[in-house]
Image (cartoon, rainbow, N blue to C red; front, top):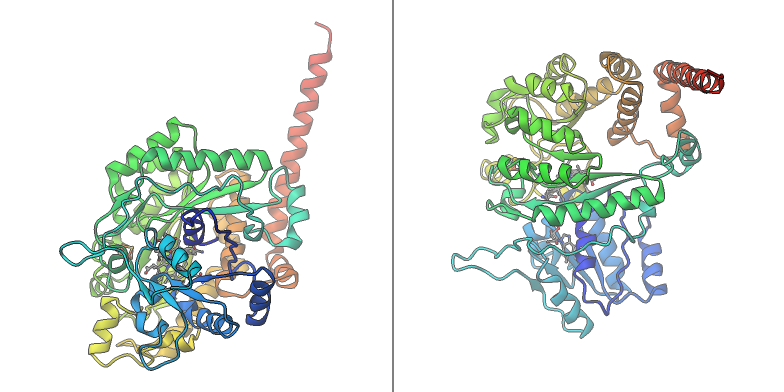
Amino acid sequence: MPHLWMFLLQSLTPPEHEVILIDGNARSMNEEELVRFCKDENIGLVGIGAMTRMVARAYRVATALRAANIPVVMGGPHVTECPDEALGRDGGPRYADAIALGEADETWALMVEDAARGELKDIYQPERDPKGKDKKPNLQPYPTIPWDTLDLDQFSIIPKFLRPYMEKLGAGWGTFHVVPIETGRGCPYGCEFCTVTGFFGDSIRFRTNESVIEELLRLKARARRERGQIAVFFIDDNLAINVKRTKSLLRDIIAAGAQLPWVAQISANLLKDEELVDLIAESGGKWIFIGMESIDPVNMASVNKNFSKPGDYAAVLERLAQRNIYAITSFIFGMDNDTPGVAERTLAQVNSWQPGLPVFGQLTPFPATPLYDRLEKAGRLDRPKHWMDFAPFMMAHTPLKMTIPEAREEVGHAWESSYSPERNAEAVAAIADKGLEYRIGHLVARLFFRGIYFPQMGKRAWMKVLFQNRRVIASLTKEGVSTYRAAKKRQKNIQIAASQPN
Ligand code: B12
Ligand code: SF4
């Protein structure tokens, strides 16, 4: 899925400038290729955004571009949290000519204009209110992102080699885009490990329902025109943070016929409301990402996420499944009360619930979070600048009751077991009462999600995955073929019956 910020800032760029978007996840280029590209295209300013986990790569790219005399500005959560690092004020090298702190909706145009005049300042920051806090954009009005005309080619989720096969599946499966849309910003919950409350603030701001619906309708028209699949990821941190407003938005989406399949993040405590869940289903909601974090209430309390109760999880998933909505359930291992065996204990629970897409990570101290400060004060950070030597699934601090290698093993085991061919088959069997199309969708989602942990790039890797899961694929295909034949036969009988004289 592409990042929203680049489309948003593109829409906020003064019209005399042209903007080219490149997503390093979708269109990979090494430093040399990027520099050549920027030279060939005569690029006057490069803007780079990065989360903490990819910032070391972002700095390498920035260094190569600046060495070729191309000015670089950076923004996003990481540089906001570590401004001195990006500007070389912490004794290290300088990576950016200028940085945007916080939300850049109102500072971006200024940066572009200053860059065009060759007068970039070091730091761009939103105006401050009398209390010294950033004045946040209120999202009303909201810029128009031209989703209907944007070139989204680099962002189709279907791997290139699979497209011809997928096209044969039926009209519209040759491309599949997941488009990020925000309906609001901010989260007041302040979980200890999260950067959102610090970055976006605890005051929540919403777009108008009309503006969201207008965007959805344009996307829906595009999907119809291109005969492709478009799904929406509502990227709000907690789409139902204000339940009354969420219900009003979903009702308006339904009334306007603006439904597209959608995914969103909603915390478990808010999913107890039956009416809300009904509206989610009716408005196109298919998958809900739930930050479950841990099945241990002691862990939940230790990261200030007590509002989410592990004891409620099974009922929440059941309520969703009754409406054909499933959950991406996200867990964190390596919390202070975790001990070896945490993966097995968690899997025992997860596998007893309605099947979903579990994802597993480790507790990571992101800079400027309360978690980072707590661990730093306690002298527990083994790699205080873990992002500069990023090591996948290697914790940056030692949990209290297990070692770093143990935590890594637990995560590996949880992924391996959750997406094994046996577990995939079990999950599909567990929803045997659902329609065939639904079960195929579930399996396909599982095969993609497996790739978050197990690198799955290219034809060979995919062929291997398909081969390993051949039994469940074959049984669904067999069922599909007989359903198709039966439907054809029925159709033929109807035609014959219709052609008989009375
Ligand atoms: C959608 C989302 C995802 C999606 C999709 C990612 C994508 N491709 O968009 C998924 C679910 C896949 C995801 C995954 C992860 N995510 Co995420 N994600 C988000 C989320 C909810 C929304 C991002 C968004 O679009 N925000 C709205 C836009 C408008 O805000 P923005 O990006 O900050 O941009 C504004 C400013 O920052 C600034 N800006 C940003 N970039 C730039 C660049 C320039 C040049 C300038 C001038 C300005 C600028 O301008 C924008 C307008 O004001 C954020 C939380 C949040 N609310 O932002 C977390 C968040 C970004 N994710 C986070 C994390 C940790 C992850 C994971 C590492 C989790 C994990 N353990 O696996 C993975 C990493 C995956 C990867 N390798 O890409 C953290 C990052 C913290 C940090 N310091 O890095 C965040 C902040 C959430 C959190 N809990 O703290 N994520
Ligand atoms: S983890 Fe989710 S609920 Fe908690 S502060 Fe972050 S965005 Fe809010």
